[in-house]
Image (cartoon, rainbow, N blue to C red; front, side):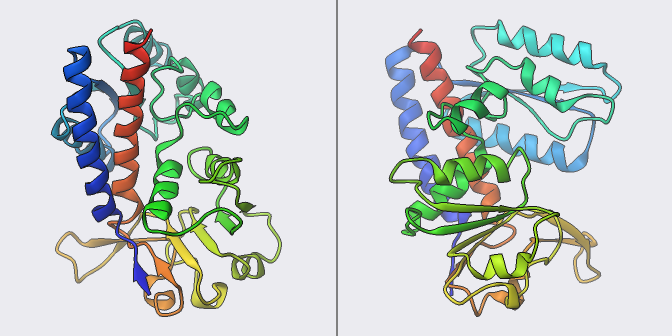
Amino acid sequence: MKLISGTDISKVIKQELFDRVTEFKNNYHFAPSLSVILVGEDPASSVYVRTKQREAEKIGMLSTIIRLNSNITQDELIKHIYRLNNDSDTHGILVQLPLPSHINETSITESIDPLKDVDGLSPTNIGLLASGVPRFIPATPLGIQQLLLRSGYEIQGKHVVILGRSNIVGKPLSNLLSIKSDSGNATVTLCHSYSNDIETICRSADILVAAIGIPNYVKSHMISKDTIAIDVGINRVESINEKKGYKLIGDIDFEDVSNKVLAITPVPGGIGPMTIAMLLENTLKAAFLHAET
């Protein structure tokens, strides 16, 4: 069994990004800039946003966090987004999800300028990906693709089974890995809560991606030998053995399947670091689009 370390691969990518950002600043005389909107004080979201800012600054980008109260109205939030849309010094915009229940996430993603939508979740960018001509690819799917390719695993011609059909991971990943290109051309099966005989489908996978948010859902009897297992899940479960009182585990039962699979990503240290690296990749791309218009 090979452990696929997103931490290690993302370090290589961020070094490449540092070099490219340095060259960008030398050529265009300004730095790529990312603005992140954080609504409320969710602890996990706050940590994630600070990490994004820190990693952006490490590679030479500018990064701003806009903190808004959880009781902000949807219209007020959209006004903040429109201000960033019209700010020429802001190249990438990201609204940290999830949002408070009174705010419609679809309306928020629709309000972001598609040329600054570095999360790749606006209808325009999702549509471009589905049409086979992607501009900004959602960061987690892009991170999964790059993790596989940079680890030496071919996607073309493989059967990829994805557990979960979210708009953030499952659906765009299905489009990305089946796209007509050397980094795609997979046969993709997208499973969800109404799929029949999921265990049999999982055993047919060359590459299995779990993104359903159920701790340790995938067991060894659901995976065939020589499967590549990609665990997107990040679940907080109580643990008396941890100082924090909890530990993070994935959607795949790592201990149960690790001796059976060809390769597997850990949680944490797998997809999470790759997601941040791909967000930075998209931010640099947005800055190039701005510089060339």
